[in-house]
Length: 186
Ligand code: S3P
Image 1 (tube, rainbow, N blue to C red):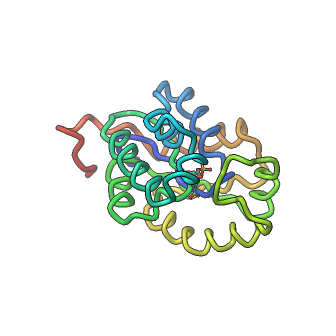
Image 2 (spheres, rainbow, N blue to C red):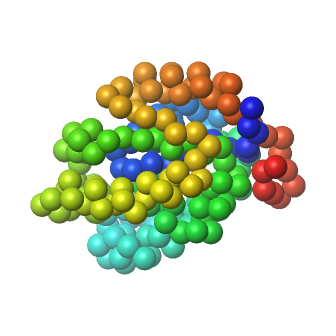
Image 3 (cartoon, rainbow, N blue to C red):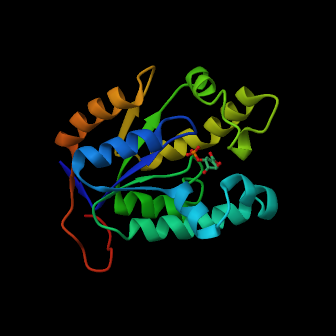
């Protein structure tokens, strides 16, 4: 049993972080936050617009601020964006303040799930498969570095994945007792 203040989902685009996170929050009776939606609410603009008008670096800066705020909570479920693991300090904070679940999905499944998506700026390419492979090469080791648990979403839908993962988490994770001013986990 691994106590951590929050439950944090990391993984690539299309791994189901938001839909599974929402279901897990419901199962555990916790509040759910989607980092991308919080960034959009604070910026008053969509992720795509932030990328287009201010660039990826600006988006990453916003992502760091928003996630630092979310991680100061106790007992919430957080779905991160696929690139949240890129910054080493944020990676450390995710690990300190969360039981980190790496949702894994293979590239063909990812392509299928994202086939109709036009909202993700990094996928605005003629060769989405190449983009996803390149991102995976860089990021898979980073997800693995901070993950307390790796879960393969394979061909399951969100409801089935959340049920199976929730069951595993019953034995693996419990909400840590609150620490003064959002300290680090033991
Ligand atoms: C990104 C993933 C997106 C979003 C942004 C950048 C990435 O989130 O944060 O488009 O770098 O992989 P999802 O993983 O929720 O799609």
